Length: 215
Length: 195
Length: 82
Image (cartoon, rainbow over all chains, first blue to last red; front, side):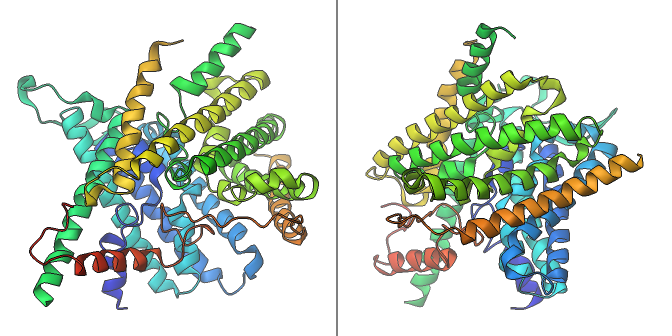
């Protein structure tokens, strides 16, 4: 596998959200605004890349029996670092994400990548893998948040810090009523379900065309 | 807090702040172990068991060690270690003393370590704005875990029916299950004014 | 930050790591009670490789499933509608 394929597999063919269906709690929980989703994506990517690097560095010193505990300790430490940094410099984002920042620890994507990839490959490959997976995850949750915020509230929040508030109002003069259920809890499930279904349909269509072309 | 307040808190934890449908915690077992109602009940019971024990232990550690020393920023790392350790000890204890319980729950216990509902509730219990004492913590945790069991059981019975339904191919499996969960979530929104 | 709190922190974290490791060790050592052959639980929800209940090679399996179902179909028909 080349480096490019290694990077792109996290975004397309093995996207953690749309293909592997992993780490769903934050996917549903933080996607009511685009800003929350992007912040979560960045925090997640940071933890994933750093944990992949550290795991691939220490893979030779760790006995097989205590593999999982040591990965958990590494990930929990990194999450605490990200959590405290975010609390200090981006308090608005920290308050919005709330409990989902510490819950990155139990996100099965990170533990899964540490075990399935980083503990078997060298540092460079693991970094690329972490970056690809993290970006794939960010794209997926940003897509979900884009749909939910656009149709649910009619706005797109890009940044929020103190007085700085970059927010686009995309429905001028309340031209139509936004579907407010989309930013409530049920909207998360329904939007993700529909999105997965549409992606499946596109995937089947592509496979279908390929097999028609071959025969 | 009086008894009636505690009962209110319990009902709120089961229905209004339902852990899966409104707080989005524990989605992984909710989608993964709900194909059959029997396994859903097993998972629910295991979650009640582990959640009560681990929330109690983490609450005590937070109260006695982390708070007095002002090191509450260690909560994440301490709690995940405590939960993982407690799960191991609970499994061992059940293996030795109650083979019958192990037969029904043993298979779900290792799945629970990476269940975000357990860590999530442990962290929610110690949030300063909640101002929980021991009684409130206990009632809230039991309510939340009963809510989890209730929802995963209802969902599994729906999914058993869904197996026979004529669903478009692209929506089979997870997509239609998520939409079903969304409709359940709308129903649970209706409980919002209950307490 | 004084000396006591640093000491507590170190002791606490390393104590807990030790507690977890001991837990795993003792749990592995404890034999299964007799007559408790756990039924195999196949979780088909996600493709996590670290979860002991998900099937290995789930991604490949899904791909072959899709391919097989497409082969069986007439080429003109859409795969989405059944």
